[in-house]
Length: 232
Image: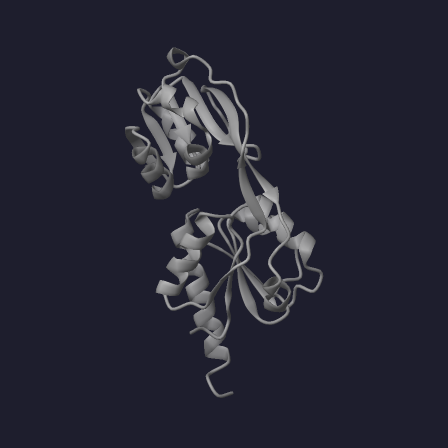
């Protein structure tokens, strides 16, 4: 096991999946969610008003409710394999999988798509729409929760916190005053910036994916272990 534990801040069900993947890589992983996902009430606009359905999180599939089925005839553009898998499980045809939201919307502009329905979270990534006509409908929200009792002890000693969003970075920064023991493995530059300063180290994954964040954490653990060999 690594000398530096990895702290997974994601809410369920992604949090448990990330912990399992981290442990499969030989990392010591602890789940300390800072949010919980809850559905929002929304009104479904007419299907024929759109060319494409965009899903940037599997949470949209999980929490949109019965009205989601109204759009099953639309091709889906998804961010990440997990979102694509959730969409297929709900009966959708996934036409494309992208590494991030902006890359997704850029590709739609190049394909001359015009009218896009984006089922998203209450707090979503800011994007440049270009020539696209985007209807963004929040169908779920991430609500702050108190971290588990193990959190305080974990962040008081050398550890690596996985930051998968700007919102998580801001929340983590608000919770921790003494940051020097903790290193940050962030999914993007904006997520890293949200964490602020004073951390042991901040590194950004090569791609905006959960897999890339875990690989970054693995490398960071190896660097830490090489500085503190077993028995010293």
